[in-house]
Amino acid sequence: MARMRKKRNLIPRTEACSEHFFDDPTLNKGKWREACGMPEAKELYVEIGCGKGLFSENMAKKYPDVCYVAIEREPSCCLLAMEKATRENLKNLFFIRGDATNLLEFFGAEEVDRIYINFCDPWTRQNKPKRRLTYRAFLDMYRQVLKKGAQIHFKTDNDALFDFSLEEFTASGWETTCVTRDLHHSEWDEENIRTEFESKYAEQGIPIKRCVAVMGEKPESRE
Ligand SMILES: C[S@@+](CC[C@H](N)C(=O)[O-])C[C@H]1O[C@@H](n2cnc3c(N)ncnc32)[C@H](O)[C@@H]1O
Image (cartoon, rainbow, N blue to C red; front, top):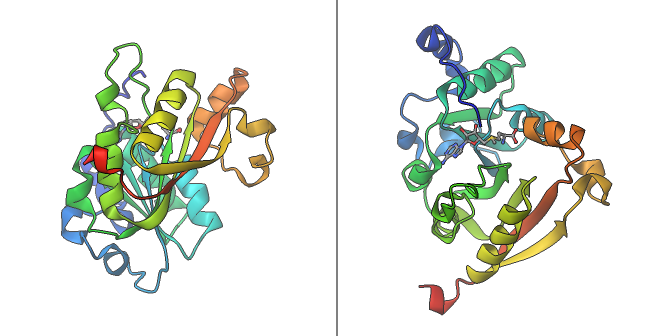
């Protein structure tokens, strides 16, 4: 993916989004609902790699009672997403400008109810499977911050990444359900919320792959 040019006035523009942003998100570990002013929120959803934030914005609108935290490591993308949330005055949407590899510094044990991963980098050309956000080491991290039996919702345009991810989920003790290799022509399309990349791929006629992984026991052989 082409790297976004650094945004001018990054600091003042970020400050203008202070309702949706925390200087040090690690201070919220274990108490995100309170920090976000939503102590009554039953659910906390996390999106990893939200890009410019279209999906998180529409999710936050659709589920106003859910506390929604989106992680994005690219500062320029994160800024655009935060500015949208600010313009739309979305009271339940918050951002972490940081890397998902540090997830355990951001969230406490069993604090998160659901994780969304949409169109993450496939790392197939460079053949670096360990960098994929569905690699087993990432799944083990997600397991720690998610409640028992929680779900990961995963979408991609990339067949190789999808096959790899299904295998990783199964090997790590996650049951895959709602599996489709053509989401937009499936029974689930009606409730589907599209991301920026999803719309781009759909315009190119690329079928969208999607699965929901439900947390089961971690296999002993994988300890
Ligand atoms: C291909 S884009 C997809 C953006 C958006 N999810 C969509 O579907 O339109 C992948 C995004 O994930 C972000 N990303 C990749 N790895 C990440 C990581 N380890 N932590 C946080 N963000 C990450 C990238 O910066 C990029 O914005």
